[in-house]
Image (cartoon, helix red, strand yellow):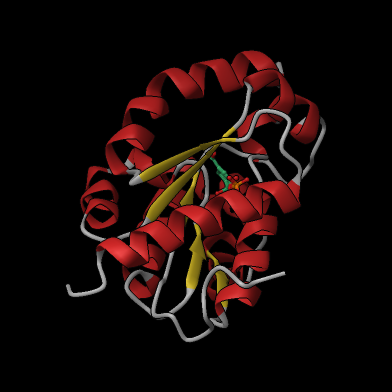
Amino acid sequence: MVKLIDKQSHIYPILIGLMGSGKTSIGKLLSKELGVPFVDLDHYIVDKAGKTIPEIFAEQGEEGFREIEREALREVIGKPVVLSTGGGAVMREENRVLLEAHAPVIWLKSSLEFLAGRIDGDPNRPMIAGRDTLKTLQELAEIRYPYYTQCADYILHRGKMNKAASLQAVLEYLRQWQHEHAYD
Ligand code: S3P
C-alpha cells in the first residue's frame, strides 16, 4: 500500500474530542505513520503530578485538575509531536485560544451512545464516577461541542469506522492539509 504521507513530514496533529473517542489509540497510530513522537496530555499530567487522574480529582477537585491541565497544555503544545488532549481541555478559554492558534486540530467524533458504551464503569474517568454515563456525556456534549467546533480544523465523524479506517481518513485529511500548507 502506498503511504499517504512521508515520514518527517512536519505535521504535528492535535486530537480533541470527548472521552472514549479514540484520541489515544488513533494518536499512537498517527505518530507511527508520521514518524513523530506521541504525547498524551493525560499521561503527561500523571507523570508531572506523580498522581493518577482520579487522585488529582479527589485531592484538588475538577478545578485543580483543570489548572494542571492548563499548565501542561502550555508546556507541550507546539512541540514536534502528535498530541492527544483530554476531553475537557477545551473548557478553559486560554486553552481554546492556544488550540485555535495551532494546526491541524482534529476532532474525533462518535455518537454519545457509542462513547458511553466504551467508557461506562471506567474507574480512571472521574467525570463519570457515580453518575449516569450517557446523561453525563449529553451534558458535556452540550457545553463542549461548540468549543470543539471552534478549535477543530477537521471533524472526523467516525460512525462505524474502526481504528484502521479512522486512521486512513485522518491521513487523507492530513495529506490535503499538507498540500494546502506546503508553502506556508
Ligand atoms: C476528562 C477527560 C479525560 C481526563 C479527565 C477529564 C474530561 O481524558 O482528562 O478525566 O473532562 O472529559 P480523556 O478524554 O482522554 O478520557
